[in-house]
Amino acid sequence: MAVKLKSKTKTVYKCGQCGHTSLRWLGQCPDCQQWNTFAEEKETVVQDKAPRRLTEFSSGVTPLSRVSEESVPRLTTGSSEFDRILGGGLWPGSLILLGGAPGIGKSTLILQVSSSLASEATPVLYVSGEESLAQVKGRASRLGLKNESLLLLSETNLENILEAVRKYQPKILVLDSIQTVYKADLTGSPGSVAQIRECTAELLHLAKGAGLTVFILGHVTKEGDLAGPRVLEHIVDTVLYFETERQQIHRILRAFKNRFGPTNEIGVFEMTSVGLKEIPNPSELFLRQYEGAAPSGTAVLGAVEGTRPLMVEVQALVSRTAFGMPRRQMSGVDYNRTLLLIAVLDKRCGLHLESQDVYVNVTGGLEVTEPAADLGIACAMASAYREKPVDSKTVWIGEVGLGGELRPVGQLADRLNEACKLGFRRAVVPKQAAANSAWPRKNGSGQPFDVQMVSTVSEALERF
Image: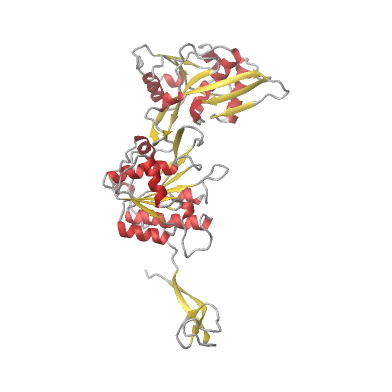
């Protein structure tokens, strides 16, 4: 089928002496210096009717049973935590967006990853639009990175960046940041909606056409969202985002979107003087080792982030309110769901919290929003209200219903196995879920591991 073309006529002014062309009439020709030589002409421009495509994917109609799976080897980055978030490593030809607050460690992390990849004989081009080459070199020296094979470029013009890619043929392209890049043929300043969208579309076309893995770094707005149009997140293959604030030592990196791996996977890093250091066992970070009994209002819940089970400590403080309206303040948990748990404890368990201020906090800066954390949060609030400590070697897992019943949760076996590895001696879980799950009989210290099955919140509160 022939491609239909459309034509467009535009008006130009042409010098009759030297042929100089201008979009507006001029009294004197800037080339031949002659006066009154410009005449109006109509110029026809042929344009392709078909819109520009983001990728080169095109195929005929094929039954699913006849489509063969491609086994593409992934490229490891040298960081096990970063590889875990990506789903096992870098997928060739993918476009990855890394976002976070200013100063959170985006440039530090991507420079460490770039240096590690370049050391494995993988050509990497690091393009900085915010810093000079001397500044990038200074950061690399502070981080102790001495890889001389890493290619650096300080540029903001997209055409010049693409020309460097065609010349040096890297396998990895890093762009820091997308808000500084612009296309010369587009109106608008760098960072505008049109510039960000078109530049990202060009990078996607480059990644899919040449099999080039592209990292683009992005800023965030005051509300905490990625700056630029929301279509930016739909174009890219993977969206990685730093959750924690820069004032905290530990950094939590989460995959909000991943076409080549699980979503909501997290990686935990620690900011040190030599860059971001990965933490292979985050559960130890979120748990505190108490010498004696844990204080009242402290409980450990079993959460799952992506494919990783985590044991997380939740703290609650309940105190008599000094005003007519009790205060509720939550950090790291869902506010509305915690209010629901307060109502259940009041109605179903006889805990009169209507005249009490309630504060709930998850240690380590982690956000826990899954329903399986309900029982641990409820036990922490009940412990704080009764001023009765909870056993620090007990983990609480379960979703709480409005009737006070405990509902089953997913991946219970994974949560219990993680609790055993960390030396917990007891787990309180919903009866319906535990009946169909298998768990170890001894923990990592060789002590018996007891799984107690309960049906209601009231029954669970009796197991303190």
